Length: 110
Image 1: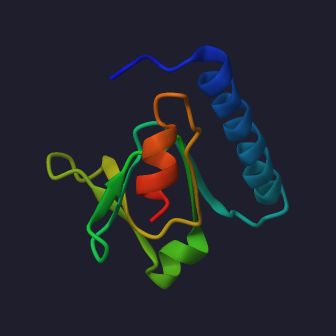
Image 2: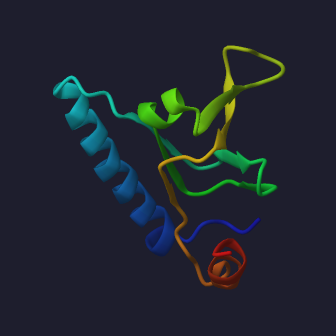
């Protein structure tokens, strides 16, 4: 796996995570805990479509978890450690790079 390009991938990812976390944290201050912002290596699987990916950013709301649209899966080795979101999170962000543009725009789009 190639290293991430600092200013076209790494920096925008940090800014997006920060902005999204501000929104979620702001909601918490208003007593409306929205859910979880997760970044890098968060496994997302959809068993119905036989799809699995590790996007740059994931947001999963408590509403989606409560409704069963998404589940947080614990590690088979440690039940108090969580390793995967299964189902449909509310937001998935993939920052496209020169090396991933073909994969992201053709394969993942389907």
